[in-house]
Length: 88
Image (cartoon, rainbow, N blue to C red; front, side, top):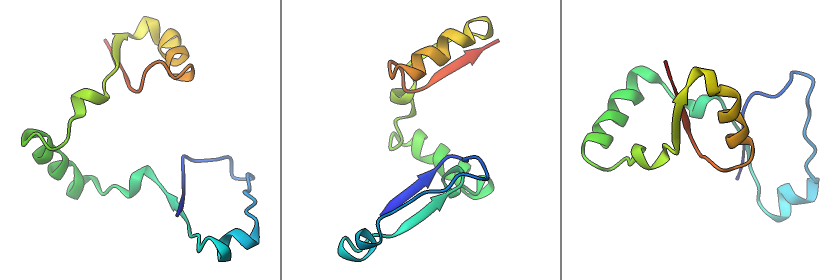
């Protein structure tokens, strides 16, 4: 399965070799915000976190003030952090 994530420019297009669809039995699917339904999913995520089943803490790489947001984006761009939380 190929999942497209992120919102591309409306005029953007993708090209996939037709033979890949058949020979690899490939499916293509879009994902908007992980197909999350906040009223359903956020309580579930909180429960999983509280039971130790969703290690959110391991996804947090760094924190910093709003004044350092440009440096934070540089770290993300360089692949040096996974998730950076802005504090203010």
